[in-house]
Structure formats: structure tokens, C-alpha cells
Length: 260
Image 1 (cartoon, rainbow, N blue to C red):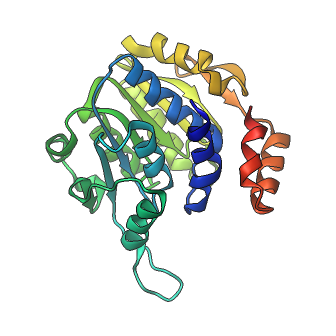
Image 2: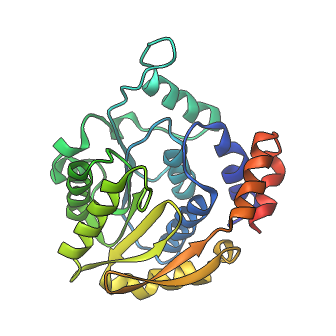
């Protein structure tokens, strides 16, 4: 990852309203770059776009020539009651000078989508970010959809796992892994996300996470989860507090130093 990539994550991306944590931004980028280096091809997809913070991270990582599918209801209202979510999403792309292919945007309920609708737009998916509805039926539907369109070497990133505010996400991800444990396993966890792949690629992605230069700033803790050994990237509270203080103080240009 070069200096411009880090500037994008720790400075440019912070201007977009959203929730992706710097450790996860570094995991996303490290995994996508590792896939590209190994010529592991496929589209990229995201359920739950909000205003595009993680979407534009995906776009930046794979370049403007890659296919990024965005799925969202795009029905959030501004403070004045007007629904400008989609407009703001497009404006954010222009501000970052990153492409939004509107032919690859689905405005609708992800639980009503079929695998063919995804495959027709981006083909088999190598990285699928699941951050849609946080109730159990949402997670189960979205995980099935992601599984059905995933490339053999694909990754599913589940958001808000183990977040006490959304306990049914934890249940849904655990149910998915218990039901499909013969084929899928978690290989990485952060405070906010759980990363899953097919078992035949488990060793490869585990090695990416443990050896990626950008992830060496974190303590790597081996955790047992549903019969698999998972690398948990620990981000100490002290560092998180310093980072948040710098962001709130407008010191985004220097905040990336916290994660070296």
C-alpha cells in the first residue's frame, strides 16, 4: 500500500459520512490487493451503501476499471425531510474523483434479490461486503445471496458482528457458519467485522492477514470460533481514543501515524 492509499483512507475517506473503521479499511485494501496480485478475479459487491464510505474504499482499491455493485434502499431523509441519499452518494464520488457506474446500482431491498440479478451485473464476486438490514432475516437472506454468487476464492465481510446493539447479526453469521461450516470458515475478525471464505482458501487468506505490512500495527490474537482458528486484529482502546481525538480536532492529515 502506497502513501496515496493511506492518505485516501485516513484523510479523504473521512470526509464521507459512514462507519468503516480504519483497521477494517486496511483489511479491505490488503485483501483486495492480495487478490489482484494473485490474479484472483471477480466483481465486488456491497449491500448497505449509506453515503458511500466503504463503497469508495472498494472503488479506490480495485480502480475505476473494476466492477463494483452497490445495493441499498437509498431512502434516508435529510434533516429537512428530503430524500437525498442517492444524490449525496453520487456527489461524494465526484468529490473524490471516483467512478460510480449507475448501471451497477440497485435501489431496492437486498432480501428480494436473486443470484442471477447479481451475476448478470458483475459476474462471480470476489469480495462481498454485507452491511444491510441488521435483523436475523436480513442477515440470513444476504448471506445466502452472497454465498450463491461468490467466486471460489471469494470473501464475505459481515459488518457489526458481536456488536451488542445488533445481537441478531451475531446470530445470523453464526447460523450461516454452522449451516455451511463444511465449506466456509471465518479467517479474520476485527472489532466490527468478521471475514469469511471457503475452507480451501483459508490458509491463503490467513497468511495475507498475518503478513500484510499494513496490518502489522495490530496485535494478532488467535481466536477459536465455531471450530476454526481465526486471527483477531486487536486495536487497543488507547490508540482508538487518540485517533478519534485527532479526527475530531481536524488533524486527519496526521491521524494515519497512529496506525503505523
